Each structure stands twice: as structure tokens, then as C-alpha cells.
Length: 318
Image (cartoon, rainbow, N blue to C red; front, side, top):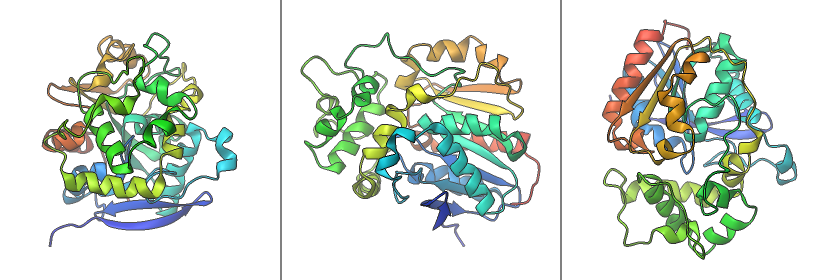
């Protein structure tokens, strides 16, 4: 009988968080943490693969995303990255999982890294896609004013831009832009949503049915929290100059991921500086990989992921 992804809601720190899960976990548990504009669904290929290999796959919708509850609006100023770390810990506790592998993508890489540092006894290993570890908050001061991170960091700017279109069109445009090799930068008089229109085709690996899944979930969640986390919280990233990872780390980078062109990203990956914080680090490049490499080239990513799990894992209770 084919494995099927199941869904549940867990009461986590005052919110009901949606969690997709599959597999019995004879070999352990793998927790998948999504980025923007993603939800649990972006890990569908990896979840089924690791479950078939004997692991339990768990992919929550981050608080404020997808089918998970929205944090209270009056607490907006107190939203921090540690919320995401604490949510992961609470999910493991709620499911009686002693240790897990963490797989993070885009901003989901940050709580994966931070969880491993704060809870080494609960971490089997870390796999991150697209975002290198940074011991200090990312700085984009050298980027043009039209850089999408700077634009979306302005309160109200993205909201006004997005309001011109329905949710499906917004998600479609972001997927089109983020799947390219060039950094999305608007010119003077342009907004980010103006950088692609309906004549721009979707990536060949992303179907209209996939788009519909994302659109429906963002229709439910809206963009209030996703704009706060990550775009308006980058400055709140912790300083980790003394970081020393005890768990093994695999970093997977698509060489056609536009993030590769962001300030200091390629340097962080190619200079060896991450080795200072991660004694057991492997960096693998996928030449044709885009920002959504796990959806674009799932077989390649799955092979890398399984090799890492098998090499670094030990059978643990699930």
C-alpha cells in the first residue's frame, strides 16, 4: 500500500499548528522546515522518500503560515526567531520524539541551525538548502533600494503591492521570480509584483495544481505574518560568533539559486568560513538547482538527503 501523507493539528505554545506527517520512523525522525512562499507541501517529495526508507517525516506549517494559527496581532513587536525554535522543540515533545534530523530551506534554515545550537542533545543532524549559516544578522545595506527584501521590509509596502492582485497571482509571481537565477530587484517606479506578469510561464516543474495548493493556503493565512517573518525580522537574527555545532551539517546549494548572488553568500559557502563553526560540514552544489531545488530536482535532493541520514544517523525511537 502506497504511503500517504496525513495531517493533524497540535496545540503548541498557545497556537494550533498544522503538521503533515508520514512514516513509522523505525530509523528516526526528520523534521522539515519550509521557507517563503512555501508551506509543508513544498517538502512532499522528500517526505515520501524518507518515509519509504524507514524514517518518520514531519513537516509543520510555520506559525502564521498555511493551516497553522496566526499569532496575536498585538504581540507583533515581540515576534522573534526563537519562537520558531521553541515551536520545533514543543512539536518534538508533543510527539514524544527524543531526537530528530532537521531539514530547513530558505528562512526555515535559520531555526534549523539555531535549534541544533540550543538543543544539541535533541539533534541528530542538520540539512539546509539555499541559506548558509551566518554568525551575525544578514546585512543587505549594499543592495539597491529596489531589492525585494528591502522593499518587503518596509511596513505597508508589500501589502499595497500585493493588494492589487488576488492571492493566486501573488504566489504565482513570487514563484516565477524566485525560481530564476537573477535577484528580484525593482526599478524606480516599479513594485516587485511588476517584475513578472501572466505571460511569464511557471517553471516546468511547478504545475497549476501545485499553484492551487499554495494559493488556497495563503488565502487562509494571508501575508501578515509571512511578511513579518522573515522579512521584517532579519535584524532580530541572533549573534552566534561563538557557535560550535555538535551535530553534522549538510549544506545543499543550487548554483542557479539567485541567493547565491546575495552579498557574502557565495563567500560564506566557498571560503571555508563555515568550517569554523561546523566541524562536521559537507557542502554540495547542484549545478542546475534553483531556489526551489527540492521541488525542481527532487531525485537529486532526495539522494543527497538519504545518503546523509544513513551516514550520520543511528536508530533511535521515533
